[in-house]
Length: 135
Length: 175
Image 1: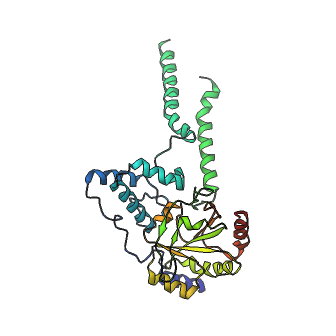
Image 2: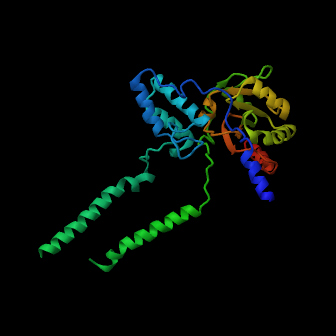
Image 3: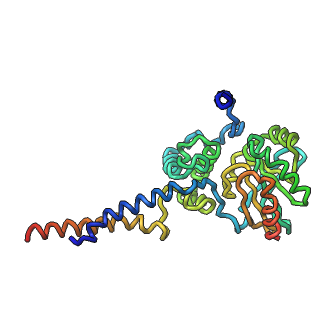
């Protein structure tokens, strides 16, 4: 009974707000006037991880911090910065984890090498079978 | 084809299953750590959060002795729990500066009136820009900055009373 009352109370309780009352930053929900710049910003925002909802990109997330990150990306693109500079700036602070694009650091070598190795492996098997059939 | 080669796919599948199970058993660590620890505080300058209290800039953090930089907000619930601990640290002589994230002067004033003000200076970071430039990802978060303005330690989440000795040790080590 007590558990039931408690769960009903919990379901009815107003959730504590973990978002600020300030309006979103200027470029958070606004596109850049230059379509080329906006396209660059969009492409980058799709590849940056939201720090709050860690499975989402900042383009998809409604978290305050993701909105502020979009503001930061658009502001810097508008100021003429290259997307890769912005990505590098964020990686410097949060590590490779912040970017969804796999890094070219040695740690990701198996990832890049795997398709080539698998292709060679598959080719070898096919070659072996073809040879056996003929003989 | 040799027998060992035939077994290879089975071994691969088992290996993948073991890897998946291992990752599932591991508790999920969602804490984001700043990579700027042991690096100089990136340069910033924030206006004051409330009237009568000075704002905060990176150059003024290098005061010759270690201090805490605490990210907080009036809309942050765990910050309320952390406030008395910061007050206690202040009474022990720790210098604390605050950075109010996405907050209004009214919000900050109400928060400090209710929970006490342990801060020497309060910068207002309205669009989280300084928070992002320090590699922080939420509130509350606390950085130990040494006397030369180098970040020495990052504490993610509210400092509880059990964490005080550890924070004091970090401050001591930053001397």
